[in-house]
Image (cartoon, rainbow, N blue to C red):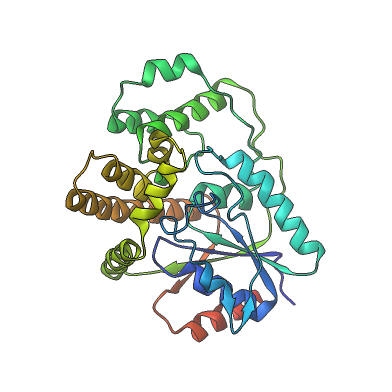
Length: 304
């Protein structure tokens, strides 16, 4: 019998987390809880890499949670994620199934694994006014001065950086208990992938998503009435494709800049995961290029 009540599968973008998690779920009667900060939005499918076809394994559909739970344009946050994670986690456990947390958003994952009790931080209009003309690099330098937990890997637009500073400033000036939840006993599996192979996969996957209609996905979101600024807020694919769809970037420049941004994002993800280890979380790293059966076998051995 496993000593763990949660299995966590994490790693940088394009390392194959979803396929490992779904096959592990099929083997263990598990259910997936997404730990991705953008897959929770409806209609944002290709750009967030939901890969919902991978949730069918050998003819069986693997149940999943915290995917497609918010409207595009909404600004979901880690406070809401922690709340929704707990609901999903308890529901899965009560039905005698194994919860499997899978994703690459370090802050979301660490918040639930370490039991951070976060609060919903209100907007600070005066602070936003003071920061509105700052560049992203300037905002990143400001954010680095705060010690409050924050996922810098997700800060790739000025609006997101301002919100991060707003949250950090709130925690600095308010007496907030951030360790209210008991830490969960989770086996944490990291999928390790060599840098050049990761870069190759990212570039190939970006082209594949373009071929699958990612541009049309963004155009449809804009036509449906989503404000371009709201899509820019989500960063990465939605930032650069919105700039292209609104005539602010030519296609080739958009593709090139987006490719670079995703590579940088993956690097920041790995920096966050290494930081999690320094903060006391044990991550068992497994070579992402191993055959699937060997990866699943290694995980199940660690579980027991």
